[in-house]
Image (cartoon, rainbow, N blue to C red):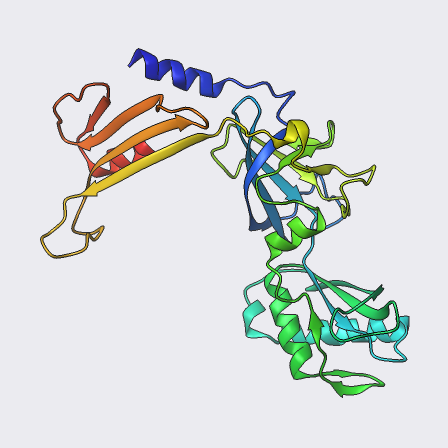
Length: 315
């Protein structure tokens, strides 16, 4: 028990001056309210990206990235100007509001803006270097698919009639879109510029360190004003962080010939091994059991009276 207590104590310690550099393991997103401190002029729901990782010192990190917006492209109809884009914006907004998939979403607007940009399609041979496209920026990731459906089935545009449009990059997953735009690859090291992040006031994870930062139109790692830097796996950043790897086995009081069901078959034990990345032997060995259990050599045995106590202790 003394060794285990020491491990818990070490896990709780951290150097907060160094936690802005970490190796990322996973990126996902949640839907929540916009951060008023980082985005004072916006309101309503937003997609908040969460980057999970581990620092060089072995501390778990959750970096909440605010301000990255989902988008898709479509070909710009010939002859369309800025005034026509504003009219198209209103038409698309109205069509989205009619869609059943947004009836429970409370947002000031669904289409945040539409920009005219020069891009080049990779389909077919083209002599021209670039063409005019419309970049449609929406409030939530699910709006991308809704916009795609509306545009591909046809939409009425004043002065242009009802037209169907081919969309581009409309099937790119939101987290992947973020990784592409920030040059982030799986398992690389991320650095958030000092002074450009704030400790999370409402943590969304169980990580030891959690902070919020703003996505300031980061498209290339070399941008001087990037708050979020993605390091190439070279030199110092080719090393692995000291990940703690949990291996576990859950046993239930099963009935013969039937797959366990939560309502009938309680969890009777959870066995755990925790190994440090690169080490051969685990430094934590324990088992949490329902009711009593005989001692096991080299294993910390913890017994509980109810299933809920077992599961809460394991959490």
